Length: 261
Image (cartoon, rainbow, N blue to C red; front, side):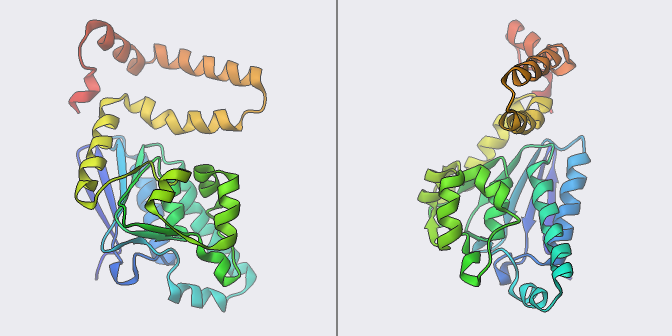
């Protein structure tokens, strides 16, 4: 049986490859469950420091599989709620994964596929990639992925793209913040590898905690509490083994011990 998700791990880098090219890597309940479980496993694996989410074929992900959607259209509201919660669990698991994540976007991403890109910490795509939040064409909305897409592109942009279902290109995705970088197809792997190299040279705990820091800062409404929490965080990091090693290496003009991993 063909694996719908291929997993490759080399040292501290794990690569998850969506492998349903015949349906443009659209996901159904099976792929959602498999991908969620694998992400959770990697999140608990102390040997993994970077996770790359990539895809086989010409498309990154077309979002929901048509046959799966056809089946869900016949289900009850309660059954659809349970199904939607499974997708929500996948997106939250990816967004909150305690490891840096990179989306290697080699082709089109629509609907939930855009959600996968938005949930990753770093997103690099090719000029040929197309994007679309096309749910409104079906009388629906990208509700489950909305927190992550809005966080990536901002409320004003989201209001436009959610409502119009318009397709946009990689240059626009870069402009609005969905992608961090756009490179030629033959330079995509090199660009991803550069980000991996940068992440592996940084402190493991620091890189793993970066998204938590950003999330906490954005959530704070109390400025004084915000300052106190950030001061506590940097103090904790400075006296931690990793912080001590990083500061010592800098002062001694040597590489920190984690770069040898």
